[in-house]
Image (cartoon, rainbow, N blue to C red; front, side, top):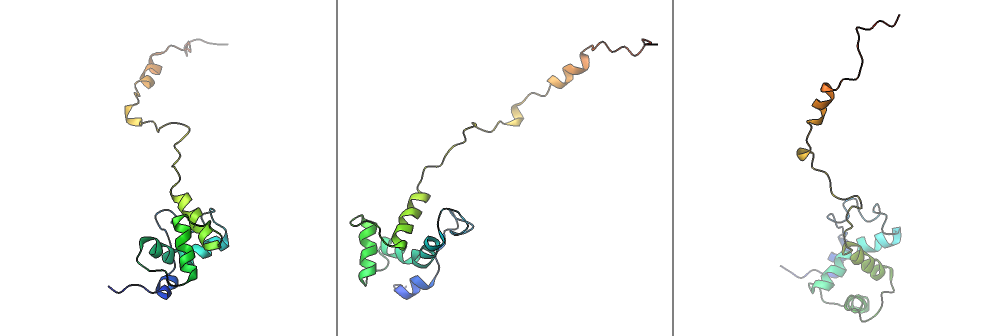
Amino acid sequence: MAAPTKQDLVYRLFSDVKNYPRGFRRSGDFSIKEADALEQLGNLIIALEKGVYEAADDEDHHIVAVLRGEVPADTYATKAWKKYIDRINRPKMGSIYGTKINTDDVDDSSDDDMDDLDLGDDSDDDLS
């Protein structure tokens, strides 16, 4: 398989169906500019991160330096990528209400006790 070119990587839009099934724009996590930057440069950044594509120009070298933590993120694409990585790696919150009650274990025999109660309602008494 031939190594991908930068044009191939930028031409194909990046999407993360697992974490953002409705897309970056509809998630509410990213601004429109950040979503555009992720979609346009996401595949390039992944290829640079995994070593599939060698950095060819200054922009690519800057992205690699940001990925390594050598320089801070200062472009929309690198800021959006850092934000994306932080969002997908954040700890998943549990429910504050506890776990779901398993309805198979609940005893429904208490309804039968209601039939045995004498509520004092005698229909034989005349109220007239």
